[in-house]
Image 1 (cartoon, helix red, strand yellow):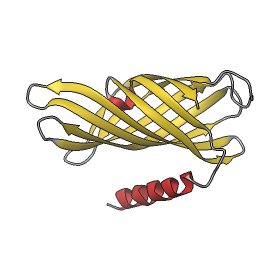
Image 2 (tube, one colour):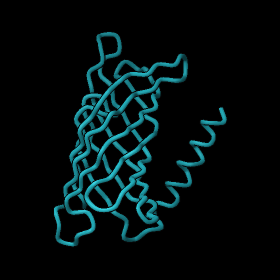
Image 3 (cartoon, helix red, strand yellow):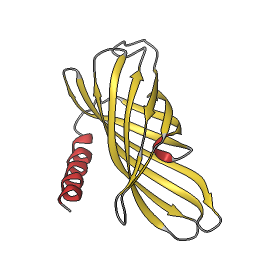
Length: 161
């Protein structure tokens, strides 16, 4: 219960701080696999930058077929990403929550995590490449009724906007 409270307070403070930086780095991305199941479309925004550390919030949406009992599912992942490193090469660590609503009325929550490598060839350059690439190990963790760890991976292609 304390972990949920701490995470909730963290997300509220991060959302509140998101509007404070007028020149925050923003991205849109397409992820294959990863936290959205088979894929997700996401919006990402920088909320903190301190030296070689940057924190981004990512909001996504995905639609995947599940099975005959549940129909299809809409997945809404929200993650906080810590990026460590300057320039083109960064360690990307993320954790969040993913709300899933199925077409048959089921509702459940998973905790996606992410550990990956972000390659941004135009990072820090005004006229550089605006794309980034992130391969990542993205386990999906179920913790409400019983604890399950589902191994998963994803590849993200993002565009700075």
